[in-house]
Amino acid sequence: MGEIEAAIGSCDLFVSIGTSGAVYPAAGFVDLARRAGATTLELNLDASAGSRTFDESRRGPAGELVPAWVETLLR
Image 1 (cartoon, rainbow, N blue to C red):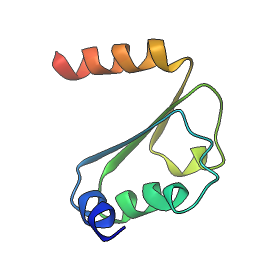
Image 2: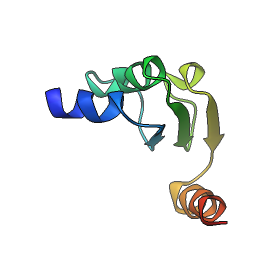
Image 3: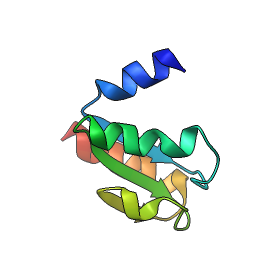
C-alpha cells in the first residue's frame, strides 16, 4: 500500500477504468490523487459510488472509451 500511495501522490493524472468504486482501499485512491493535485478521470459503463469525486466521468463500454481516450492523448 505504501508504494501505491506514493505513486498516486506523485501522479498528474489518475484514471479509474471499469470499477464499482465501492471497495476499499481502492475506492479511496481518487481522493488521494485529488489531494495530490492530479486531474481525475473515470471511464465506466455506469456511474460508480465515487463518480461525483472525479473531475470528469465518461460513460460507456471500456472497449470503446479507452481507445478513444488514448487517441486524444496521442494527438
